[in-house]
Image (tube, rainbow, N blue to C red):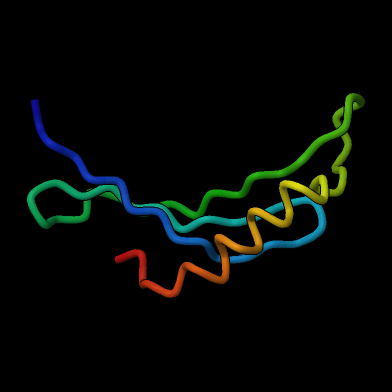
Length: 70
């Protein structure tokens, strides 16, 4: 029944992937931190460029994320 807070910050964006910094907190104490890499794949399971419409949205998110995730 613990109340957890998940904080996520945008780190980087490349052609086929983006990286997030994520941490989980309980009562002001960080329980853990993770670097999350999200990769776009094609039907054969190979890395593929992030589609332009999604990249545009991610770029806006990246520019808006000036806060430290901690």
